[in-house]
Image (cartoon, rainbow, N blue to C red; front, side):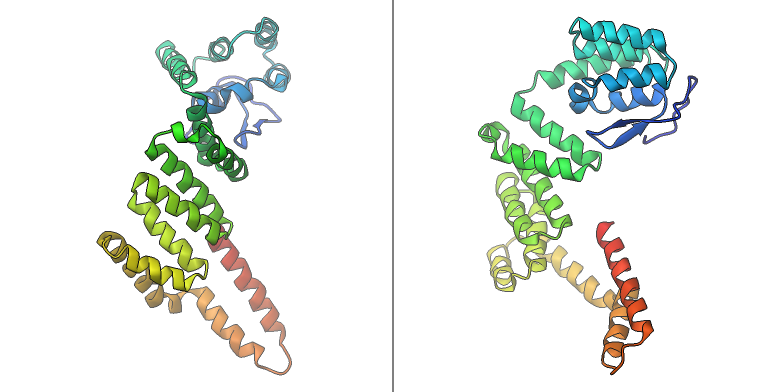
Length: 276
């Protein structure tokens, strides 16, 4: 959950799972902590009747569950549901609950397209990369997208590009990194754009873009240092040593068992390094 939470109520044997963020909670205190830090997904998180069933069956809080059911039957708003849940424990003070209500008001006062961006950002923050990618694509394709500020558009382009690059789609990622730079002017987006072009195997384009952006001296210096570091240190990495050994083994007429074991080990290391 992000920090140590002192709980005084029952702990559920089976956690409640929030599909929107991939988070599991076991206690009322953890539930409140989660809701407090995920304003962007409150609407969908509190829409599920299963949450009330879980409060009743797993936390043994029948009266609180009954009250929440009554609120939902009366079509109570999100703020009423939040207050009802938070008042079932002393984990947050009245002042903190009031601050949360003010944040909820501020969030729903945003334009729909601004809320959509916050929603995508929330998925990314929680590590729900699949949903984040879908949401960013939908956001960028939305006809209201240009109503966001240039900085916000740049952030959306950049975040989508990061997700694409993590999946090895460097050519697509480079396109969005460039759009991010053109919108926001952020040097980080330009730097990642050039990396993506290089990793995408577009060598001619990479050299052309280096010439086009040569005046961005900070970016050029950073890339030069990074490539120098990689060149200087690659021979010390276990993966590089494994590759050299594999090249020796594959030239033998009969591939030894060591070759297949080392190949599996190298692939495992590379996957682990890439995913991290």
